[in-house]
Image (cartoon, rainbow, N blue to C red; front, side):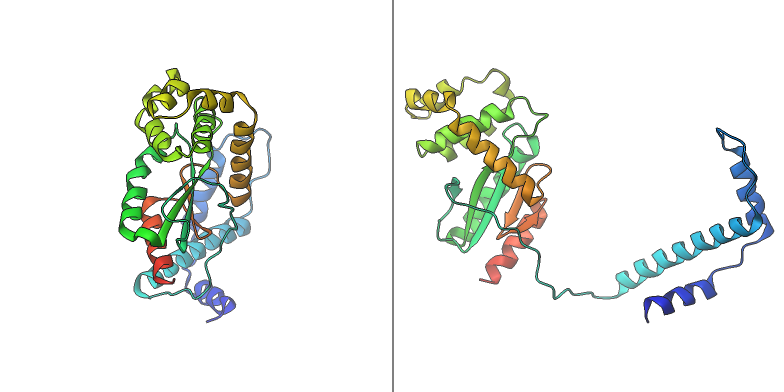
Length: 248
């Protein structure tokens, strides 16, 4: 049926508003604290409000019942966001047809929790899927920005992934982090690393990631985009990756 026909059907099936209904609403409104005196509402307005509420409840119940017993399929193409992966550190093959852009924050506990899932998906699909990492340090995380800058400097020496993993492993120690010592322990050239952190280039890279994340609709971390399709949780990530691999 059309929307108009549905509205007429619901209106005809709605139970009548009784005097008891009106008395209840009047008592309720009379009990509310008012900043200024006003005339009590008329019965006609109250009856219309009660009737409208009942029709809305019936509409919600009908929709829920229909969804429960009906298989609904969407044939619309999923919305996709254009995101650059140029220069972004990656886990996987650069020729992988399925590209997952990950916006992460090294102080974010949920980002740390998602890491094993990313690695499992990477092992499962091999060269079919690649993860590209972008920075999105949240403003309420004091140590997220310096950690992101350090990760960019590690990427400059081709050591992003080991440093990325180390930062998450030592997330509880970020408050007293010695980024240079950690870099040296992972085999990076400390002098080059420290010079990178002291320059503006790494910070500007992080800021570019943030701007692109904001433009893509990122509001929290971790945020995933599978071939441009936004995904917010691990279950959704697995499902969308499977769809994209199947559709190669």
